[in-house]
Image 1 (cartoon, rainbow, N blue to C red):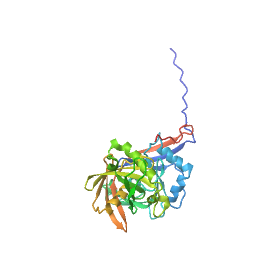
Image 2 (image 1 turned 180 degrees about the vertical axis):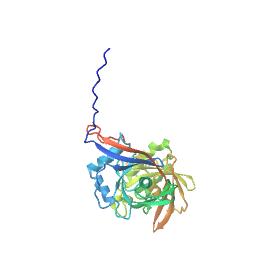
Image 3 (image 1 turned 30 degrees about the horizontal axis):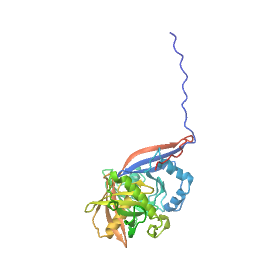
Image 4 (image 1 turned 180 degrees about the horizontal axis):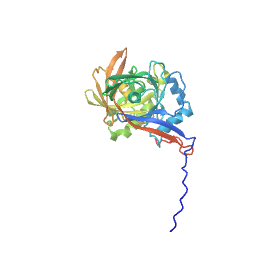
Length: 344
């Protein structure tokens, strides 16, 4: 039998040279995702991080990256992340522009905790291998810090020190189908939150009631769109009710909550900036201890008042973030789905 002639080698199909490539490092903080863009995003102009937020929201080139990373099939309706940007001045190590499925937020506590871990693990900030290291970050709501505690070269915990947080309004009545007779408190923790007991609607903070709580959260946000308490007292760019916090008491000093933010998105963590708003309300009511703040998935933040500044508090919120992966996302120019889609 004659030997079979050798077949010529097959040339591999090359990737399109015009495809979009975005690199990220992903974390979770108490169960809530946080996707840090480390390569491929265009520059975002602006004198401050708050200015850059406006630039990003108005730029198709920049916003398509947000959509690419948040929307399916590369993300999901509850994805969260940030662009790393320059700080407002040399007093901070870095700046962060937070984003989610529906746009750009003014604050993100769980993201700040993740950025603290990211900064020391990647060498953006040189850590003390056996002690605390402060990572100073400029975000749209102001200057915050993540105090990263290491032991024997490993990160053990992170304390998020927030901007001044305060009570905005008490017992604001709601109007609309299913809302009549219910009041909410409004507080600021880097973003404005409406706060209400889940029991006001006959619900509990449990996964079984989550769909109903998401629906209520959307209704409450809509009802407060034009309310004066939804206007930030210092900068209108920080205005608008960002999230609705449904809470219940588990024991003295121990509360469970779920925050429904943006357009029906659910925070799996206890919500960092939301915890700051909640602590401001509790402090105004005379609470002086340490708050054990539990999420709907059973994870925890620990919150305390670092100091008082007039009517505001400076909250410290302790948690931890863990790396979940490093990714190289691509967008083939021939892909008919483009930057993706959302189902809610």
